[in-house]
Length: 188
Image (cartoon, rainbow, N blue to C red):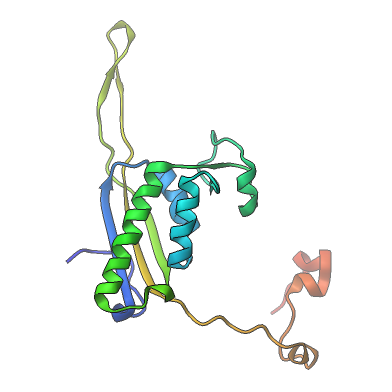
């Protein structure tokens, strides 16, 4: 039995996939996992294919110190983005594995979405490099563990009608009620 760090809502309607100690950079794989979270399965597969073909990019949010800028990142509201090939190929393989697990369980793959995806650092692989003047430097790899769940998507919540807003049953968000003063308004 493989251990996962989370439990699905419904074990029978869930397909899982996991990879441990993969030789892909943790920081790149973390960015890819972050983008795929809550995405429908078919949409995620299409997105990863587009990234491999350099039509779209993976936005870099957290570990983005030296990431270059690209206009493709505007789609996500940021300026930095990359196309991490090895991390994307790992995710494609995991999605394909989870999809075949779902088919084995008899689930409809067109209705599945990524409900849980997680990337954790694995133990570093230590090697050494030989430097000038007889010194030795660290030469380490940063592998990672990745796991994901595919579950049936929940039905979307309908938007409240204008009549419900007028009758006061539903309040509009604070930024629409108060404009610039929304951050100063507190309610009990």
